[in-house]
Structures are given as structure tokens and as C-alpha cells.
Image 1 (spheres, one colour):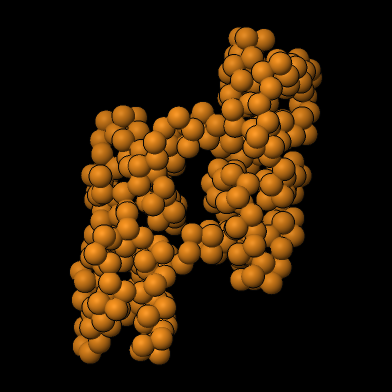
Image 2 (image 1 turned 45 degrees about the vertical axis):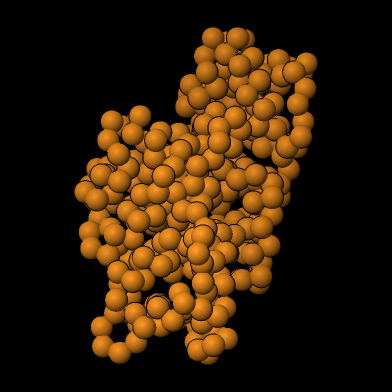
Length: 319
């Protein structure tokens, strides 16, 4: 994250002991009943790397697959949170991409949230994990499930075309003019120009381009996108723009949207909390409180219940 110190809510446990944790988890799941509190206390307070060490010890010393044991003992959304914690970050997001495209219909919002918010290294890790786990390229699966300019946008994202080291203030006005000419200045919209510039230019360069854009036409790039685009393509391009300006704001808004109104979008809530807790969830929850005048923790408590609630609150409640 540029300019802002990333503040995770889950950090490595200082007196970590994989053997002791594995034994405690085995005890929590052995015999009649399950000690859900013990499972929450251990797995939400260890880094992902430490959880992988626990799973390795569990397999080597007990001959048991920790994820399978957890699945057999837990259920519902609580199980979803705990099992999500046990995957490496890239495997978890690859799995989420697959889930978004499995079965009838496609969860375009999930694909946008995962693929339009990552840097080249993160995308590369997800792409490699996807092919290893599912035996087919992620780009190929995306092409079979999406269409048109939205498909082109996601394909550009997963091929990692962004030049992350480019920074040339002298070309910012020119690129801003290209965006203006492709949208506001003409009848109809040349979506390809928006796709190309927003997926190829570096984050600092895009900030300059957006400033120049406002100078040229007196409107923000978001205002233009909302006027010129619609549907999934609009969602994808807006996600890129919002993450250029403030990733924490983007994720804070997504969390709020997942919990406001009728019903809770649990998959979105779980995915963001689990995938950001070791990166910047501390920043996100501060932004959440600033935007909505309530804490993320209090809203989660109001929208969830039981062990599911306890697990999420444990992940959110760090520094």
C-alpha cells in the first residue's frame, strides 16, 4: 500500500509451538463434542505460515489431514472461516475464483474484488495456484464464463500486463486526453482505451493521469466511468480506480455493502476478513469507522452469530 503503513490485525504468535498447537487442536476435536473456543483461540491468533506448520505437524505426527478433521467437526459459516484460514493466501484466492465460476452463473463481483485489486506478483501466485489446483489456466476459465469488454479486462488483469515501475509525469496529460477522447468527447464509448490504460499503467502513474483528467474535463474519472459504462465492466474499472486512490476505502465499502440491507453476503465478508487480516485489516477497520460512524466489529456482531461471529471478531479485533 502506497504511503500508508499497512496494519494487520493478525500477526505471528511470538511463543509459537507447532507441536503444542497441533496437540491442542487434536484434543479439541477428539471424542464427544468439539471445543470450538480452543479452535478459534489457536487458528485466529497464528499467522498463515504458522498454521501451515501446524497442519504439517498434524499430518506427520498424527497421520491426519487437519483440514479434513476440521470439516468433519465444524459446520456452516464457522467452518467456512476456519477452513479458509488453513489455505495459503494464493490457494485460498484461487479457490475463491473457482467457486465464483463453478456451477450455473458467475459471481462477477467476487472476480472483480480478487483480480482487479492485486499487484502483478499476487496475480502470478493466484494464477499458478489455480492451474496447480484445477488443471486448467485461470485465463481460459475466465474466458469461458465471461464475455465482451469485461472478459478482456479480467484477461488483462490475470496476464499481469501492468508496468508497475513506470512513472513519467510528462505522459500523464496525454493519457488523460486519450481517456477523455474515448468517452466524454465522443458519441459512444471506446472501452478498449479505458481497459488498456487502467490495466497497463502503474499505480503512481494512474494517480497522475486521474489528476490530469480532472484538469481536462472538470470531472473525476469515476464520474465519467459511471456515465459511460455499466454492469460488470463498470464494477471492474471502478475497483481499479478505487484501489489506485485507496485500497482501504475500497475494502471498507465492500465490507459495508456485504452487511447492509437484507441478508448478509457471508462469502464476501469471510473472504475480505480472511484475505486482508495479515495485510491491512487494521487500516480497513479504521477507514470503516470513519466512513460509517460505527466500528466494523460492532456491525459484524450485529450481522452474525455464534462461533461464526466469534471467529470473525477474533480476526478483526487486533491492534
